[in-house]
Length: 127
Image 1 (spheres, rainbow, N blue to C red):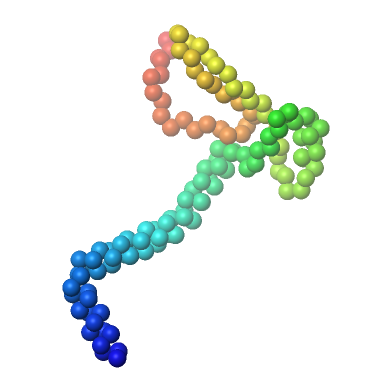
Image 2: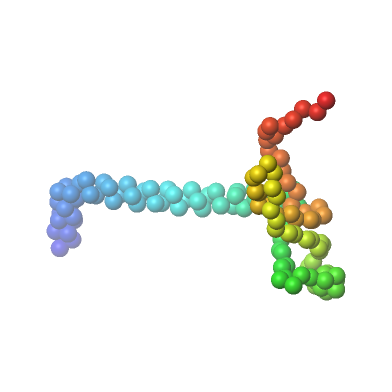
């Protein structure tokens, strides 16, 4: 019985070898993709963690439609495992420059979310 099953399987593979090769390649591709993602995931997490620490990105943002008062901020500071709390202010607006409307978001923060300048373009020289 076992011999007949093996013989029949080999005959089926021989008759449909293109399909067999295609399915085998798809399986290898899937396994390779999965292994690659599993291998790079810890490195990606470490990289973003280092970047967030360097740029002082906040861990959590508390938002209120009515706004938060100084008393609210003081109450949040009393919670355990809170290292630092900073109150911020942000406003959406529209700026018109040379008949162009630019939608902007002004965010007033202290020393959080420091921008990282990667490249400087179209810089004007100062005399």
